[in-house]
Image (cartoon, rainbow, N blue to C red; front, side, top):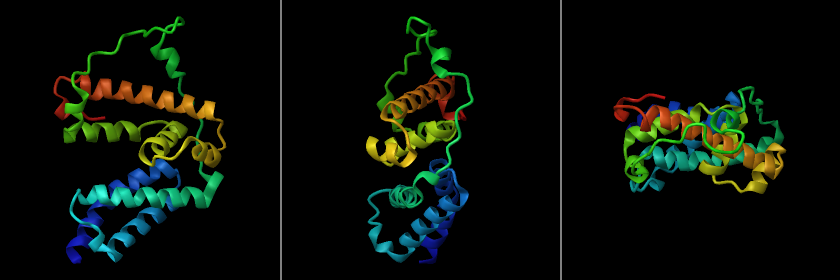
Length: 189
């Protein structure tokens, strides 16, 4: 049990980063992570060893984050994006790319590489304000459109615009930090 407790303590900070990005509230993130670690300590037999410990904990944390979102509803703080409109940066007025994306090679092969996942996590962590929040709600927590819209007070159109912009930023970040880097294993976001 003490070995599990020390492993859990070692994973606390990555779980906190994940929770902070989603909730944008330090106290709520701390609650969600604490509840996650407590659940793991109370039922260690639930961890069957079929995945990494971190993967199992993130699965528990996703449920705790959804609980926090439901509990606090519209209180979740979301900062408006004050960055220049990404569409203007990436596309011409006629809708074509300003600069065509570089060939990414075989994304499935890259996905299997641990370094790629680390760069992807860092890129997601740097998504601004509400873009990062809705991206994580949709793609990581797998919440439905209506639930995200209800929780954040967004229209579905606004949600889809935010998701589109988040994906463009991720593409741009991955392009710069992984696919365009001469040695991707040493790239840092």
